[in-house]
Image (cartoon, rainbow, N blue to C red):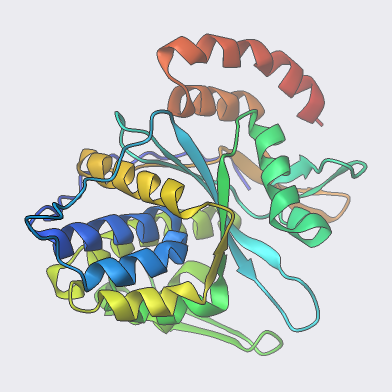
Length: 330
């Protein structure tokens, strides 16, 4: 498989999120859902707020914004009856109050070293060995950045979450048909622009073609943007309590309520700037008869330096790159 360049899409998605308390609540809650696909653990606050209008004696308080960049690791976990599951999706979502939200998607077969383990293996094995905490440490050491929190999304819950916000509009780029009897997976989608249910949307993001993980990651990023557009629709205002109840059971996070609200408010503040999405640069390769995604380390660290650090911080990160290259080069 040949190397393919990462892609960046800075298209702006406009929202109508500042028309009254319910609309603001929706925008904040769903911005978090879109950007983190799971910070809806702030559901108790949201449900209460949805039923309590501010009065003149109790003016509506604007949530505080983050003072510094917050890097969130989003893990989509395919849990099976006989094991703890593996991360089928890995995304670093970075939010601050001055830039567009940034998403870096990491293919699940990325070849890395896992802290405490010998040799190289696939990055999705970190969840098997040590759950979300070890996955966070692995990604943090690999990219050379601080991960401030995580969200784990159970993939089995995703169809219900997508249906709760009314499905998504996707331009399916080609005929997609695949049957895996062992996994009980059937994918059957026609090409063209169409409205997908939760089940159909999961078929779209799980489809594998000749591009392997790279193709799947690009479709996942495309799906996240479509989910954002659907989530921000005005029709979801009245469905907010139902949406939150549906999402609540499908996620886990180590982020506290107050911090989650600040992340949400910051993401909403910068959402109109667009969403900067990238995939880890690299290529597929067989090593010892095992299929890996081998990252282009030089391009990867350049991408991280550009997207995850301010001008003042970037030089310090660049000075770390030689050591990172020595550690992770095969």
